[in-house]
Amino acid sequence: MKHLLSAADLTRDDAIDILDEAQRFEQALAGREVRKLPTLRGRTVMTVFYENSTRTRVSFEVAAKWMSADAINISASSSSVNKGESLRDTAKTLRAIGADALILRHPASGAAAQIARWTNDGTDVTGLPTTGPSVINAGDGTHEHPTQALLDAFTIRQRLGGLDGRRIGIVGDILHSRVARSNAILLSTLGAEVVLIAPPTLLPTGVSTWPVRIATDLDAELPALDAIMMLRVQAERMTGGFFPSTREYSVRYGLSDARLAMLRDDAVILHPGPMLRGMEIGYKVADAPQATVLEQVRNGVHVRMAVLFRLIAGAEGTSAPVHHAPP
Ligand code: CP
Image 1 (tube, rainbow, N blue to C red):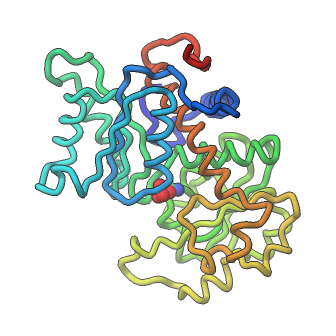
Image 2 (image 1 turned 90 degrees about the vertical axis):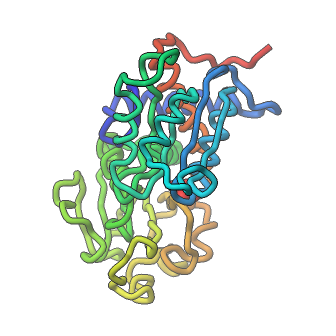
Image 3 (image 1 turned 30 degrees about the vertical axis):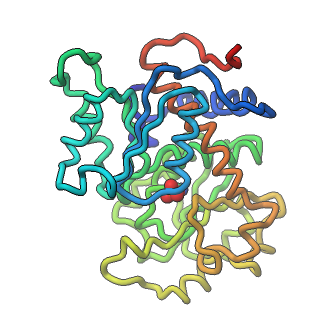
């Protein structure tokens, strides 16, 4: 696998391999004072973010550094993008500088796939490897966020022991959520039953082709869920207003402190972050024992280590992971 652009790029075996690899990274680093493996020494990983991020950008940087790669962060606001440079020229520039991996967040759906094509078209300057960098989609518009889905799957598997046959509800603003689309694809690939629970106004056109069941009554679904994923309402992507109103949405689709009692005690509560406490998730719910919000963040580092390892070292035919500590 050269790039990770969509959860649909992953077969069931690919996804399980990445989750298992992430688990090995977690175990290899557990209890260490110095979290440093030599796995990607000499490789260069660049994060290129045209949208805000806390979790994804930082955890990719940490993942790269824990594997001894050189990690470079580029934000649109402090780069020559602000002088009008195109996405294509920026991507080709970073390839020419020597990126082994480009991790892109961009407001346009399909941007990561386009960069993968531009930087791997075989026409780059001399002296560089014939193939361009691996490209990882760290969120493209309302399309996909595959590493978020992988870390969510990892977290559910860790809590519940597996995903096969588990019923997982994804609740809220499905229309604008790249997390929802990637999770719907990946969790079904891994054998889970995915239920999207949302007002009809926050479902995308074409959702009937997704591998999911659709429901509108949250209270009716809660008791049978093994896991529930709450989504933030993405007001910044709503140019034409928001229906239902924020208050009505919160009352009907928020996992309030009162609703927590309707979930099974062993059900897992996920949120990709950033959370709006009091809107889609109750103030106390986010800190309840069933909630995995910070576990998700932590697991994201190990999952992203596994993805970087597979794309960069795997692409070069490295035969086995190097998980031992440096001498
Ligand atoms: N879940 C997620 O993508 O969070 P950030 O926007 O903070 O990266």
